[in-house]
Every structure is written in C-alpha cells, then in structure tokens.
Image (cartoon, rainbow, N blue to C red; front, side, top):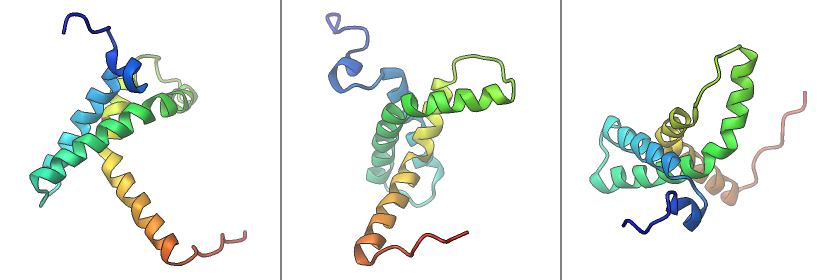
Length: 115
C-alpha cells in the first residue's frame, strides 16, 4: 500500500478521501441511531452516506461558507463537519428522492402553486 498516491480515491473516482470517511462516519451513526435497522441497512446507510458526502461536500461547502460569512463566522475548515452531516442525512434524502420519483412515475406531480 506504500505505492498508492496520497489521495488515490480522488484520482480513481473523483472524490476526496476525507469527505468519504466523514460520510461513512455519518452513515454509521445514522444506522446505529435509527431504531429497527438491520445490519444490511446499516451498511447501506454508511455506503450512501459516503457517496453523498463525497460528491456533495465540494458542491455545498462554498454555499455554506458564503452563508457563514453573512453571520461573520470565523473562517476555518468546515468540510469535515459538512461531510459528516451529509453522511448523516444522505440516506434520508435519497429515500425521499426515490419516493418522490415513484410518486411522479405513478402520476404527474401537482402543478406549481401560483403566488
């Protein structure tokens, strides 16, 4: 393993290893906190948490930084915390998107409210 580049995962699939590790941690916490999860569901939560954090952190970190700048929050590295949070909610968001897609498949969504 000594011949691997420093961030081999980033070179392989385009996600940074710290984001994925934070997402796995968030997914594991979600799996253990949620009652009634089987071990395969807990493992799935960790995998989905890693994917959501890996791909979602680079997208959402600049947005969060701008929002924190509005509140004059001191600058710092927020990507680890953000990756953990995305890993924690990743399976819930994916589940909601799947339910929304099934509902849309079965019938068109209601029209957008005017106002």
